[in-house]
Image (cartoon, rainbow, N blue to C red; front, top):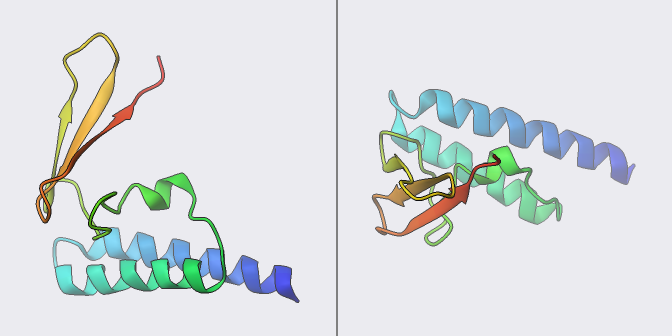
Length: 100
C-alpha cells in the first residue's frame, strides 16, 4: 500500500513540474502554483525530489525559477566548468559544476 502511494506521488510530482515548466511563459502564476504543489506533495509523503526536479527551485528563497524568465544562467570562465544561476527574486547566485 505504502509503495503504491509513493509511486503515485512521484508520478504526480513529475507531471506538475513538467506542466510548470511548460506554462511558465504563458501563465507564471499557474506555474508557480504547480511547482509549490509538487513541493508540498514531496514533503507530505516524505519523498526526496530527484535532481531534475530540484533544479527548478531557488536554493535560498525556494521559489520556482525558469531559465530566461526569472533567472539568469551564465557559463563560468574559470578552469572548472560550471554554470552560474542567479535568481531574480532574491538575487542569490549559485553554481552547478559540470562533469568533465
